[in-house]
Image (cartoon, rainbow, N blue to C red; front, side, top):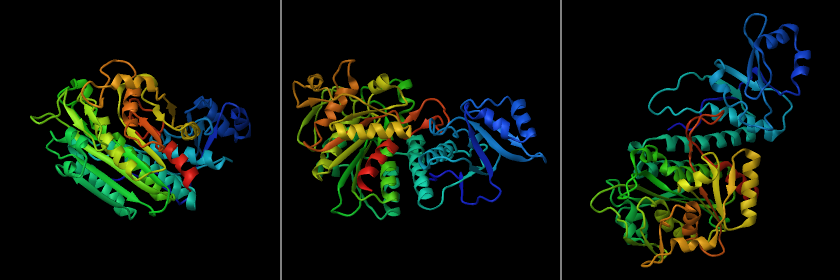
Length: 460
């Protein structure tokens, strides 16, 4: 599975310049342009509005340059539509831009070049942009590749992305970076202390599993990354309607995010001991499916009453978070396509974040704002824990009410995080419901770049 669009070139020979022009600089650009070019800009009605494009011809009728409206400092996705608009060829980004602004614009260009091509080739394309040399270019490629890995995994239909295939991707990634990767599969989950994962996934023809990837020197600071890997979610016996099931191939988006973040950490060589845990299941229906009212044991020893079989993601995460905590990480992050309530709260394009450490939360939110990878902190409002109390077990997996669903889900997860461990939980859509520059409709990585920037500032 290719995860890096063919959009970069190291050959600047005859590369066509791309120049950013905003409203403030438009008149100066017209005044300093050769008369023919200035006339052409007027003829095309180029007004430098964000996203506008003007292809500037030379005297022979060839392409001499590209003008793009906007400011990359304000919007790093300003070049995001160019890969689909430009003729095939080599291009270079002109202008005296700060390094981070240039990297952001090139990232936006590359992410706009992404197309999911597993089942049919993409139309168009062929525009390639000159990448920065050396370490900067390698880092940029790593950012693009990680994002596109998440997109590819999420876009792949469940028929080709069940727990065995997800494990194979993790194993391939481990082999590439000299990490270790193993899985606990099927009934072995019961024998090794992961009853909650087994309970959710046992109804499927694809046995549930816990995938674990480890990387880095043993005595480095320990960072745990957990990702919800529900490869398809029917809702279980509390079955979803057809409309609610249509996109449930993306319910393993948390696992895709965890692998994308892991790839970034390993590719850039952060000085951490990385522990990646992916509980991977299909929430299916059969005679042995988990039932409403069942009480499920967990690795940590807490019992969970199943109020709703469609609140299964937090159940499998409970075992994974408990195992992650046994390694005494100094920081734990989880990603999950967990609740519709988070989408009601912040929409589909912002990652809802719950965090038990103010400094960590502020660092991630600031990084997200700087990188245009938006994150919004939500409250771990402890009084709402009353809503997930159970009369027969230690807690229930769902509040059974239409209120505060994202918060009660986060409070459920918090019960499985060890005391004193800094933890951030991301309740994400993992899907672009509309196409925007650099962000085509379909699977999307959300908050991965923000979290990576936070880790990079701490562990570089």
